[in-house]
Length: 248
Ligand SMILES: Cc1cc2nc3c(=O)[nH]c(=O)nc-3n(C[C@H](O)[C@H](O)[C@H](O)COP(=O)(O)OP(=O)(O)OC[C@H]3O[C@@H](n4cnc5c(N)ncnc54)[C@H](O)[C@@H]3O)c2cc1C
Image 1: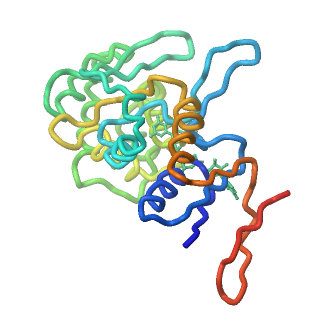
Image 2: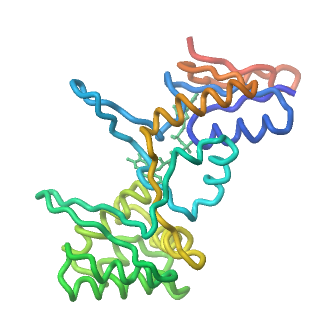
């Protein structure tokens, strides 16, 4: 059997790799000139410095992703410092770290929030209280995260803590996502298990990991990788998909 996987982001890479393990022939088709999708990096016009685009943070609770990274042999390209820390920066240049404490979850995170000096004391307490509520089951899942937060924390707390957290973890603004997504991040991402989710970081630019190392692993394993080829649709003959039509 010959299978085509369309899209060479992390989901497509995982699918192609998994299918290949079954012995099937696999072709991975990607529209862009590189693998990785949103897990990529860019350099400035006059600068050799790499800026990662997506997934700046890999939590230790991403068990499926970590299993995939082990299987692809790229685990060493990521580090999970302990105790962990999440850096924050404000538009006026203030910097701070949300520093994990060496305590079991969720106390490691709660203690970190109490030490989050970008916010004054009463705000830190409100942030801990809202976080605690997110871990409980009694939450009105019909609300957006923005609606839910607006009755619990003030604007400064939203702007300095919740908004950056939601943007980086959920790729969206609080007003646009249901609060249950935020709850999932807290329950499954930050606070699952004894240690909770330790923040992990890529040791190299994401494009070096996913477009270089992973591409090499896939092709060495016999997966055909086709880049710069947007898939336009299937070609169907006698009720069977016999090929994928590519642009150009
Ligand atoms: C700024 C930013 C920050 C983020 N931060 C984090 C973070 O800190 N932690 C975290 O866990 N996640 C983070 N994310 C989210 C994470 O990067 C994405 O959820 C993940 O990379 C999505 O992977 P994917 O394979 O589903 O999709 P994508 O990465 O979007 O891959 C889809 C691929 O399919 C290709 N494609 C689409 N249509 C076709 C077609 N017709 N033919 C061929 N190819 C096609 C696209 O070109 C693309 O390469 C962030 C995302 C962004 C943008």
